[in-house]
Amino acid sequence: MKRRIKLAQRLLKERGLYDGAIDGIAGPITMRGLAQVEGVDTDLPKTRQITTFIQIDATDRGIGIGPIDGLWGPQTNAGFLELEYRMEHGEPQPPWRPDEIEVPNPHKWPVQRTQEFDRFFGERGANLKLIDFPYEMKLAWDLRTRTRRTRCHEKVADSLLRVLHKVKDIYGEEDISKLHLDHFGGCYNERAIRNGSVWSMHSWGIALDFDPSRNQLNWGRDRASLAHPDYHEWWKCWEEEGWISLGRKRNFDWMHVQAARLPE
Image (cartoon, rainbow, N blue to C red; front, side, top):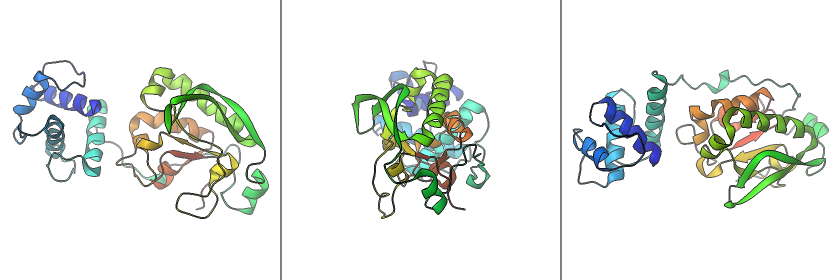
């Protein structure tokens, strides 16, 4: 919610209706500014007033956001992300074309569920190695629990550590925490894919999940937080090492990244 309020404050300031701090707090100055915007119903709760204003501003800029109703749904969220990007970069987001995302394959990861894959990685749960993370992780299902270690396949261990060291160098631990890049959803887990019968890439310890609560399985780029421009460098770190994001390539399961290619 704080991000939404900050954006509303920036948009109000641009209109000359707000002269307070961009602090994400919906205080009296923010609410007075909203009251001056035609179409904002001041009898609504604060959250709906803020949402209504974001919808109005997006519509005024030609961003398709659906009905102006003060309700936060997928279209409003997509418009919000577009507005954030424009306020930061001064131009619209470039169109998303997954087929144009070329991921190198420096380690020759095989295509998943092929004979080459079986020969390369071997049996499920075999050849695992314990590694130490370069920064502390929080278990996504219990954020009070911290961990510094995980098990992964020995053939991906060095690459995985290079990725995470790059992430630490680029973002720093403060932004890693702020962006939930330390919300760890697990690596090795011998199980079938969700709602399916074939084995997950986690069963070989060659896949990891991050921030699952904000990147749920069936969410596309209009809702998944890891699709936001703030995470561009995050994905660059992975893709330079040949890891594949299902979100970036297929626009679902944005939490998931794997050291196996997808079938064409």
